[in-house]
Amino acid sequence: MAAIVILSWWAGDFNLGSWLTPRRVANLQRFLGELRPWPIQQGDAGPVEVLDWAGSLWSSQGADALVTTLAISIVAIVIAGALGAFFSIFSARNLATAEPFLPGGRRPGKTVTYGWRSIVLVTRAGLVFVRAVPEYIWAFLFLALFGANAWPMVLALALHNTGILGKLSAELIENQDIRNSMALRGAGASRFQIIWASIFPQTLPRFLLYFFYRWETCVREATVLGMLGMASLGLLIVDGRARNHYDEMFYFILLGALLVLVGDFLSAMMRRFVRKA
Image 1: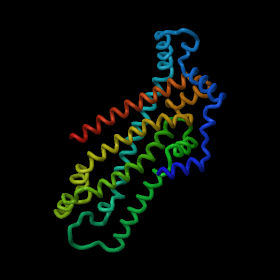
Image 2: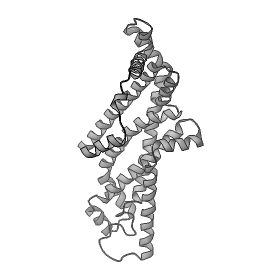
Image 3: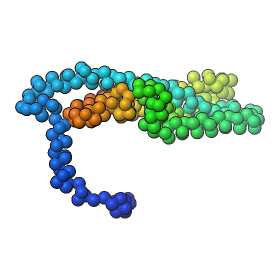
Image 4: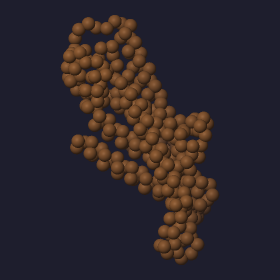
């Protein structure tokens, strides 16, 4: 590992001496000064003036953008969770067969067997594809189709996370204890009955852990995707940067960080509850 780091440093031609040139130090000092709230930059402003400035930004833009960002993440993860759970049924190799969990008896023909294998292969390939394309690329494509609104962000996050949750859910099904499913199948239960009575109760707790974890990611990505020009905190961050209002830009960055922290906290609480349950 040390050799790889040294080789990368040498091959990448990194130069620490270029970091702290007088010009860059001056730019850094100016930038840090412009991050301060506008009342402080204007003079000796106290906490009251700073709070009034922050409250004005919150009421005029921040509150709506924060709620929009949160709503986008929730809608996206709900769609992703539903689609991921659905497609996991057709990508789990022990469930997507002609006779799932069949303990014995007549084996299906080759045509039926290869047909189910094709379904598994196509479904898995689709899940790989949608999660291999980054959310930013999906959002850029949907932006051209639907314009600058919330739907490109929702669909981009939903598609990418469908691939992730679909894969994880399929692995949950494949790694479950199959004895209950085999007993139900031996008693004549249908595929749907096995899913509802055996697979669903066994995999739900772990699926919820993955679900809330990916929601944390959606909260973060919904903020970032707004930089494409869609309504969220990211749009306000880009707007502040474009107008050289770095104090406003930093304020909205802090709002986004606060939203992510709250999302992480709620997700951790829910995952802890699921583990205990």
